[in-house]
Image 1 (cartoon, rainbow, N blue to C red):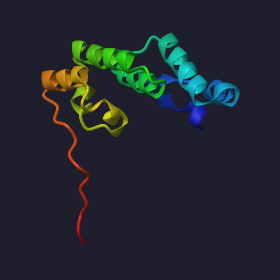
Image 2: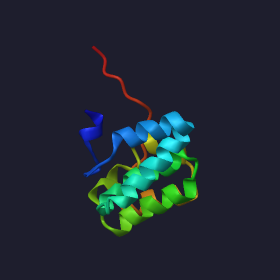
Image 3: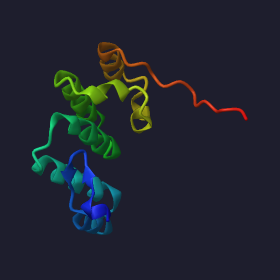
Image 4: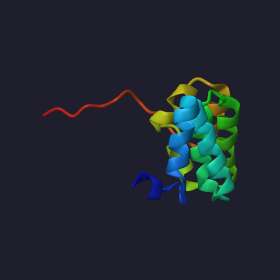
Length: 116
């Protein structure tokens, strides 16, 4: 079923992703995912997905570049980049902080719990 699901508005080949993972582990999976996403001629909203993939590969510069492209393209989802846990590792990065300031996105606060 996962092979039939859309990801950021595009279909990814789940079998190829699984084979990439089996062949080269997580890094190969994320590289294959980037390749498939780029080949799909995605909308600007997919820059978030590119940012996540690049973070998973340890390429912070490229991840930040894609977040900046989201801002330039006026992608609505950019308002969530300060609170999305996938981007947590960027906290404290000057370039990331500048992006957050530009879009007016607050940083996530400590996790909240509801009392019963």
